[in-house]
Image (cartoon, rainbow, N blue to C red; front, side):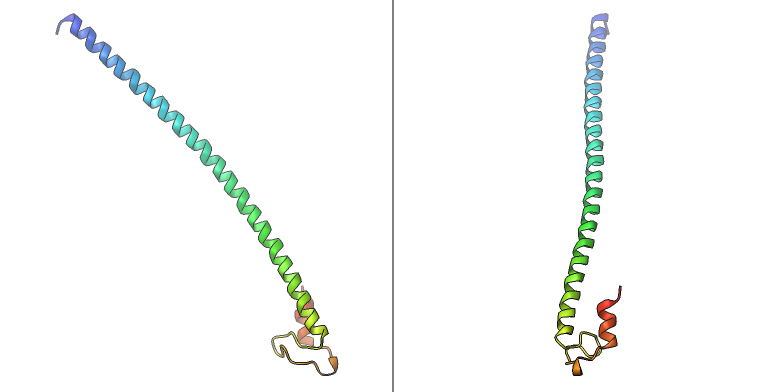
Length: 106
């Protein structure tokens, strides 16, 4: 190889290395952006899970209150709401220990 060819070959290798460095930098940028997005999505997912749990608790409490109010109304109309005698008419509107426990337990 003569000096001219050798210098041209070095220039080609140098250009290839510069292109490779540019590709590596682009890949680093992409990986950094993906890591940032991943962290943001993890945080958002965590916040949404907490919000969903909070909503479930509120919904459960609301349903529970509505159900209890509905059962109290049935009981006040003179019917059993306990598992043992559910739907049967309470004789003389006497209180039922089973119904009372169901309606007023914590």
